[in-house]
Length: 321
Image (cartoon, rainbow, N blue to C red):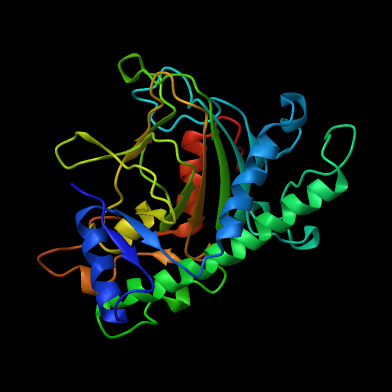
């Protein structure tokens, strides 16, 4: 199994959609090149992530909203493969969702304001540093959302060949999540149940991953073996999530993946951008993906409820109440 590369600047719409379909069916992962994505932004968002994680632990743990699952998540807080892990993932994280004003907050739908670092006795970042952090993250969200909405068009063509607007109605207010991740240099020992990130498939529709130049990401092939996905300069790593697999009746693959930190490795940083359908979108099999001989394999569920279910299973500090 090899990871294909798809460029948004090469080929016709039909050719890009065909490549996307092949990758989604056969691998569930692909590299995505988009020359229009500002390189300075890619560099800056990674720099800001490192600055945040360099804060003292006693300051980071205060940057957390349990009700909205926003802000800081501690090392080993998340366990993505509980059947095989003896402890949580050897990583820390920071969730940033869609920014919603306090007066419009809806905790049942995880909608509300983000947790931003602010200058105080609990955060030694300056006002200028805090402003730069927020501005960088908000700019990154806008650009990543633009790319994902372009992918929605190509996915529509991949499913229908002639209707680039098939999926538009499901993405009027798509929930998006930037998740800054910092992996420690602790060696992974799969035989002993220690993983940088346990094997899992992503919950939503599609994930756009920015990573540094350190290896570690692996995907599981059809025969159960693990294949390295090395970093590729100038490209995102994109993967199909569970909701898209359900929508397409298993035609598009939500591939299991993990992160393994080898002995002697450096600390690793990555930034997945999770892009999902509208919270109340009912995800049920597309008519073109099922038939009398191939009935729907998955029960219908709203995108939001699926997300809540998965957070509750994997995050020790998450509370949906």
